[in-house]
Length: 178
Image (cartoon, rainbow, N blue to C red; front, side):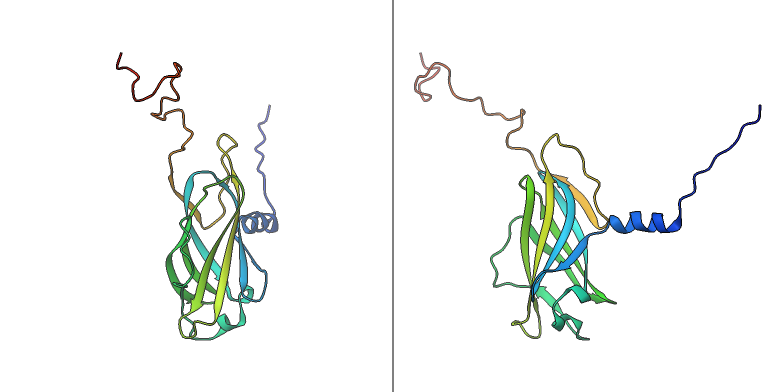
């Protein structure tokens, strides 16, 4: 009996489509707003986002030759989402690194603000959008440019040191002093 060796060959266009579908999405959603679609993330996980903000999805002022961006210091700081690095224009996009904390389940939207260093009236709002899976709901496949950098302790964890309420119903200060 002869053994046949079978090989599966994927069409190159299918392979390219699979790889491009796993990219972070950018969508212009207003005059000075870009929505960044991150896909699925997991609750209580901290991520490093390596964003490549396309110039064509951004306000017109970003297409200038010598544009420098910075985080808008006048905006309220966002404790769950912050800029780590703003590298500047590289070809047809801006390189940005953002730390993102998935602090609640379901649809999570966080905002970050950028300004043109030469003209602070020229602003760009980034809306980072993700679907966050709860505890025990699975592990998502992260899109290209998204890296998990840590997991925060779950407050509702069974490993908590809180003993709960006393079952005797007495004064908790006097329990054990009999």
